[in-house]
Length: 106
Image 1 (cartoon, rainbow, N blue to C red):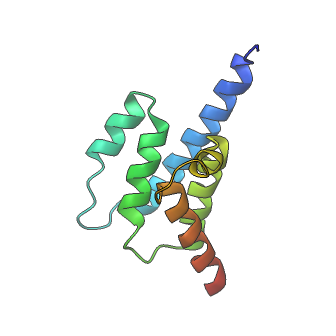
Image 2 (image 1 turned 90 degrees about the vertical axis):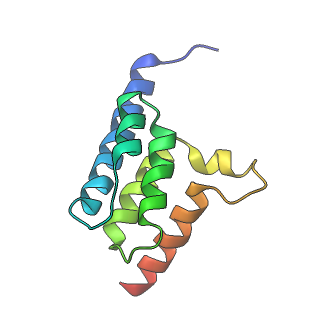
Image 3 (image 1 turned 60 degrees about the vertical axis):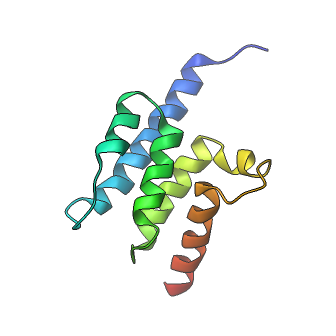
């Protein structure tokens, strides 16, 4: 099986952009520590950065657009398909729960 490295990199770049946009929604909020998230981003550990951003936003009343950005990132990284094979709640599951709740409020 051959891997289209250009397509893979383009998807990774889109996922990173979505993560950066979601992270911007948290900027300036009190008690938000991005150090671990930034470390993961610096090392191209986008899945772990996704988990951190979801965790940071989980208890906050954030707008739908925040969760839509994370949803797009999860789709680029195919986190939802991976979540199907795990017997525990993942950050992708949490993202979907918040996305659904925020969509109902619009």
